[in-house]
Structure formats: C-alpha cells, structure tokens
Amino acid sequence: MKGKKIIANAYIWLLLIVLYAPILFIVVFSFTEAKSLGNWTGFSLDLYKNLFTGSMQNSSGLISAVKNTLLIALVASAVATLLGTIAAIGIYNLKGRKKQTMTFLNNIPIINPDIITGVSLFLLFVFLGISQGYLTVVLAHITFCTPYVVLNVMPKLQQMNPNIYEAALDLGATPSQALRKVLVPALRPGMISGFIMSFTMSLDDFAVTFFTRGTIGLDTLSTYIYTDARKGGLTPELKPLMSIIFLIILVVLLVINIRQSKNTAKQ
Image (cartoon, rainbow, N blue to C red; front, side, top):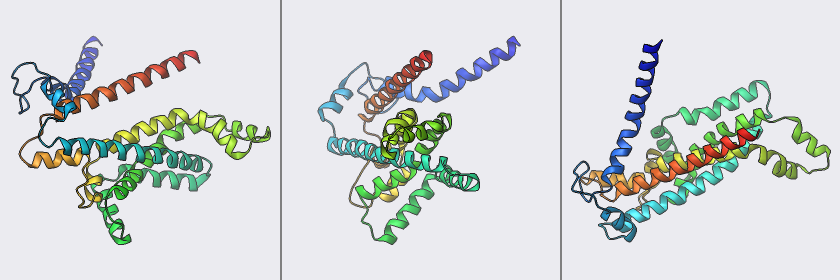
C-alpha cells in the first residue's frame, strides 16, 4: 500500500510539473532582457517597462491585439452567458427525448474540432454576404462559447428546488420578476463559471478567429503571436504579458475558490 501511495504521489507531481513547468519557465525568463527564450542575461525589469511604456518595436500592434482580444472576449462572454442561461432553462424544462436531443446538439460544438467550426462559420458568413471583421469574430465566439455556459448552468438547475419558481408565481410575482429574483440568484454561480470559461475560451481561441477575422488587419493576441512567430521569433515583451495574464487568472480562480469554500462552510 505504501509503495502504491508513493507511485501515485510521484505521478501527480510529474503531471503538475509537465503542466506548469512551461509557464514557470516563461515567468522566470520574463525577468531578463534577453530577446531569445532560455538565454539568461541577468535580472531585469526592462521587458515589463517596455510593455507598459510602449517603448518596443511594433508596440501599437501588440497593444491593439490585446485590446481586441479583451473587447471580443468580454462582449462574446456576456452575450453567451445570457443566451446560454436562457437555453439551459429551456432545455431543463423539456421532457424525454426532446431534452436528450437538445442536450446532444448542445454538446456537438464542444466536441467539434475548432478548425471545422472556423471553416464552417467562414463559409456561412461568405454565403450570407457578411463582411468579415469585428462582427463576425464576435458572432463566432458567441457561437462556440454558449454551449459551455449551458453546461455550467444546467447542474445548478438540477440542484435547485423545482417548486421555488412556481411558488414565486403563486405569491404574485410576474414571470420576469420570478426569473430575476428567484432563478437568477440560484443560477448565479453557474452563470459566473460559464462566463469565466467563455472568457478563457475566447482569449485562447485561434482557429475560429483566424478564419472569421477577414483581411482587414484585425488581430487578437493569438493571431498576433502566430504572425509574429512566422517572422522568425516572438516579441520579447510577450513573456511578461503572458506572465501577467497567468497571474490574473490565478488570482481570480483563488478568489472564486475561497468564496465557494466559505459559502460551503456556512451551509
């Protein structure tokens, strides 16, 4: 038994090292001014300084890509959270085979490879004559983010007492009031989780964005890095930028987990 426990712990640590070593590698080398990754030339904050002051080559392109990425992710996540929550409520109230069919259809975009989704949406926008740019990228991100919101909200619906909504109606609340004051508070944790997952998926996406951004020069962070890499190397300031993004996500997850732990303890 002791030997199995040692092997299990060693496996877990090996898995964590494989997952997080590349990220820690980038974080460490963001504190040196060397242009090539892996070349340590001494501790320095110059890359962070260049990132925040914009004193770097093609700074406008990188800053524009970051702004586009955040704007698209925020809009797509907000709309996907709204649509996904409404869809989850609708699916939850279906019965029998209809419910199974809609759940199955919701899972297809999640399993479907990104490149197929990207090409399909590209052909659809071309067929409809929609000019590609911000609009098509946002619509595409909403499309693949919405199913993730449904998956996050559905468990909260299953945990909720199904009689609460009916009780609110019996007590004089209108359907919209019951939705806002009864359903939404009960579903809020799932909605927040769905929003965060959608935001992360949107930030991370490359294939769908690449096929739906058109030729107007719209760049998100993923497409900027792809273009930058094809030129023969990555902009050094990407290292501190990646480190900051990782730190922000880590802090958000820690705050959410701490709040959930406190809520669980109170219950």
